[in-house]
Length: 259
Image (cartoon, rainbow, N blue to C red; front, side):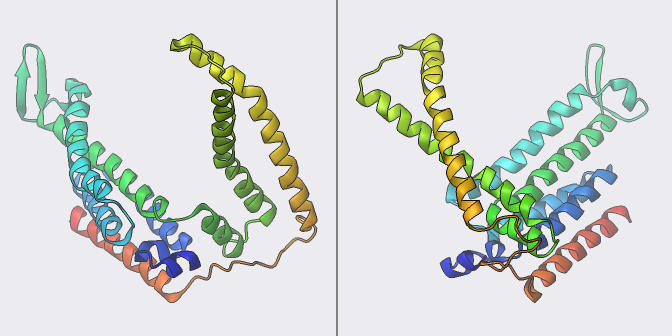
């Protein structure tokens, strides 16, 4: 959060992780209890609008949201509607009939509700996931929700293994190319390349894990039930205002959609 403010990132990056997580989780759970397309569609539109305004995105990513999200929703409406059993929609007006297969208004309503629900899930996931650093989220869990730091920071250290392994794998493959080692082409060559990288990658992982363990021991990790925090993640008034404002907007959408 402090780094986001220092870099001048848009406002969603500067909000507390738990404010975004709480807002999106409540809305995410709520959309599963409605069977109309308006409520999840309006929530998805709200979430996408916040992401477009408050997240750092490239123009391509913005275009994917503005154009791709409606196209994906339309495709889901059609495909899901086709797969719905016509027997479940008997009694509703017929939209299209091909031979014995009938596409009715009831199937369209069900597919639209499901499509909007899936779109809302994606939008709400982007609201918090695309604008929150994993380290800030872990610190927020430890500092505000009092999750034991042994679990939080150990999990954070494990997640940081992934980019480390990616760099190690790149170095191993560069070494293979520098030595002129050829594995051939096609599936057989791909399998040989993976097997040749496996042993040095495991060795590098064990070496890195040993260094991390020594570093944590040197810092007295786990010695006390609580630790002082170098990086504070305070929950401020603007975070509470965002959380309350978003939940009020979601509640208003439910009121309008259910009336």
